[in-house]
Image (cartoon, rainbow, N blue to C red):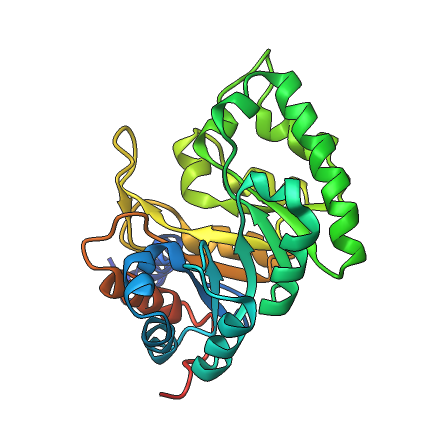
Length: 285
């Protein structure tokens, strides 16, 4: 082999190696301005023991937002005061389905706290038995969403794994998407439960821009066990999902872990991973 042939083959090899390395490199996340948040269910025991200190510790990690899943008998104004003291925003809160029965009081409470979304996170089994039940839910959500909008608040529904078990030949989650008015009802896409339910979050984010203003982030060890893990430590492709979410109009990200070994360590580990993707600048400590 002469010198010219050797140099040419070396250059060709470099191109192949470079292309291979590029294909194996992690996908960059294009948007970098999300305010990172915590779903406070993760630290519910700590929050019950010391409400103010728990919020302050979450803020000290670098988080800018929190989402409530219970207020431990605190008045709305007291919750709002604790948030201001910690320097946190709470754009949303989880409220049980039964809140629709005293909807005006729920909306008043949410407004005083400073929420912009009221999220229904779970539906009792008797209210989700078959496609007809889900259609009735959709009608109830439309009515509640209309009243919420007049109060300056948005109604959203948070998916669970059972929403992807076929009912009468259809996916219940698809029924809710189809039969709720996009102007009145939005959705909080829980990536983990959707993946465990056998569905692809990228498919939903791609097909329905604007309907998912919020994501719940918790990782999975993968099938079949789907053990819940901290964000970035499992098998879910977060850069791909977050890139798609940016295009689909996602505005809020909440990390969560239902039963972490250590609640504060869990949310801190998830924050470090998301910060490594350059989603947000760290808060001043």
